[in-house]
Amino acid sequence: QKEVEQNSGPLSVPEGAIASLNCTYSDRGSQSFFWYRQYSGKSPELIMFIYSNGDKEDGRFTAQLNKASQYVSLLIRDSQPSDSATYLCAVNIAASKLTFGTGTRLQVTL
Amino acid sequence: EAGVTQSPTHLIKTRGQQATLRCSPISGHTSVYWYQQALGLGLQFLLWYDEGEERNRGNFPPRFSGRQFPNYSSELNVNALELEDSALYLCASSPPDREYYEQYFGPGTRLTVT
Image (cartoon, rainbow over all chains, first blue to last red; front, side, top):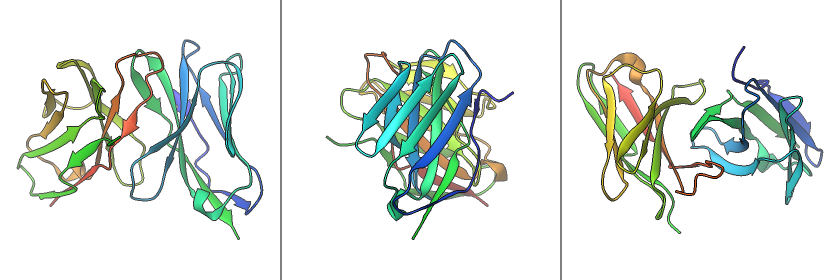
């Protein structure tokens, strides 16, 4: 079992819809969880991080964490074509080291 | 606030040569991380430096090495380059509070080995 798993996609959503990106992790001791956005050929950009169960909202983005189910998700409301990118889930499993999933490619269609 | 910077942007080397990549963290950040991202693959953790010391190392051979300088900048060295070392090398930094370990990435160095 991979430490951090994501569906590779592509996930295709129409403009204006909600995009839902999911991530599961294997280590119950994980403390903090991160979502990065990576455009093709560019470096990852930190969008949000979450460390408590529940929801955390920042603009059009909402991160959701369920430690009992070992599940973290990212919702993007009112999806825009500029949101088309690969979204990487990262989990702090051992102190300071982040383990990344392989990413979900999101396509927002007009 | 300036972000993480990396140099050079692109680097072309031939097999067997050595490559040196450089990274300057965000001001006030003390930890530097190095990752390799081969084309179409995920981020693979290479090295973590904090306060001048190597704290953790990924599953890479010893020809991948580095160091961190007193000003917290860092250098990644790859010796005896192989074709499969061609990748985007990313540096990230994080602040010293170590509460959440969030990392901020630089633009990367694209290394091509021919």
